[in-house]
Image (cartoon, rainbow, N blue to C red; front, side):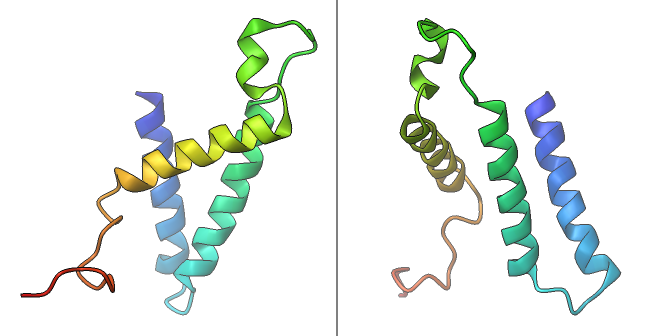
Length: 94
């Protein structure tokens, strides 16, 4: 599946920065990846040139596109194995 292939390739690409240099800040790599992903997502979700296009209604304004992007990011984050960690300040400790 293309989605999984792209996601796996992105993770491998990000990991390659740490493999080249142990001093690399993973937060900086993650921020750069996120900036590029947001730019590409916005590029890929531009409405077409037809003002009455029903397929483009959900992405017909910048605000609607941002809402769709944030919804997708929230869903992906919440389904991630890394969403909750034992070190979260709200994690229960017995």
